[in-house]
Amino acid sequence: MGRRFWTDEEERILLDMRKAGANRHEIGARLGRSASSVDNKLKVMEAPRPIPPESQVVEFENAALQYEVVDLEERIDHYKKVASGEVEVEPVWQDDWDGGNEWDKAEQRAKKDIVKAKNHGRFNIRFNSGPIAISCISDQHIAPGTACDFKRMREDAELIRETPGFYAVFVGDGVDNHIKHRSAMIGSKSSPDDQWKLFDHYLTIFGEKILTIISGNHDYWTKQIGGVDFLAKIAAQHKICYAPAEAKLKIDVAGQNYDMLIRHQTGRFNSSLNQTHAVKRHYEFGDETFDIGVIGHHHTAALEMFLKHGLKRYAARPGSYQITSPYAHQYGYGHSVPTCPTFILFPEERRIIGFDDVRDALWAWDRK
Image (cartoon, rainbow, N blue to C red; front, side, top):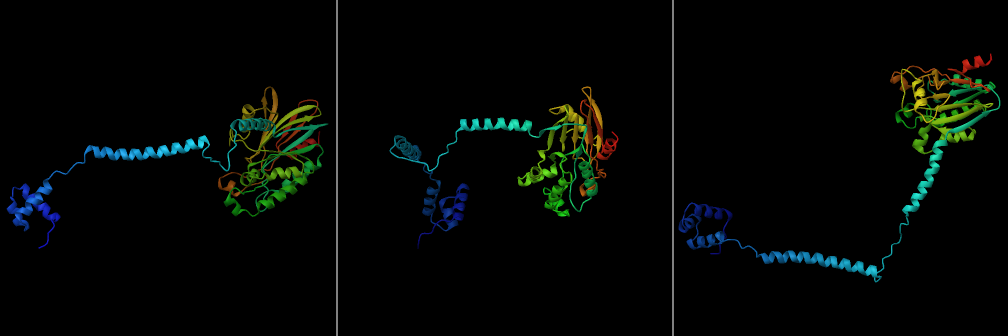
């Protein structure tokens, strides 16, 4: 009869009966095994398991450490050979960046950038005689197929062109140019290309009466999205001075000086209840004072004379030729009134007369 191996169940019964006090004969009878077989199995199961001597454990750990030591020694040996010239390792390309040199370049460039930031958008305008009148035109939002008053826009341009002594400055957002907003582009009935072409033609209506153009947020979206300042290129073609966002004009009328600030928008001080509030606060907290301050963007016309440092000054917000838009209608804004705040500047004495619209200024001009 061959050898019969003990099963797990038999080993469990063996241990349970042993704990209960059964002898080897009783256990053997239960499992169908001889008493000697039960004795031998108990000796194996109850014998203590051998613990490896501490010397063997230490020897294993030492072998692992020795392997790491050998690896480190090989690396050190390689580095020594490289350092001594026995082994040559030559990179194909090395970075020749020089921190000190690059810092000097950045410092020199920053000097030019600071000068540019302080002077970009500053223009000196001289008139040999006076008085003269300057109309501030903003937010035309040229876009065929929208509620844009093209007729009024053309007529105002023609009035300025045909009236001696009248000039214009543009305060931004000449075109709708909704390239930044996909939903507005989908709903638009004209493309930005069509709008820019019409704007280009619109400039020709003024003849040579436009003194300065600044960009609005709609104009500047082309620069932000595509990296091309399209308005700057159009202004250059028409030989008109251009600046993004803001211009500071020093106006000399036959020796009498006036300072005018034009901005398309400001990120602070705006008030829905007092539109000229932002202009007057800009006078107080801006870098420089001015005689006339004009800020566009809000499409709400306003004009106010105010006193600062003992002198009469003017704050103005032009209206918009875009009478309304889906955006304005959706968010509850009223219809815009297309006005062009106009200021008559006199020679020989500091005297400013402000009108909230170019047509009112022209009426007074004809009676001077």
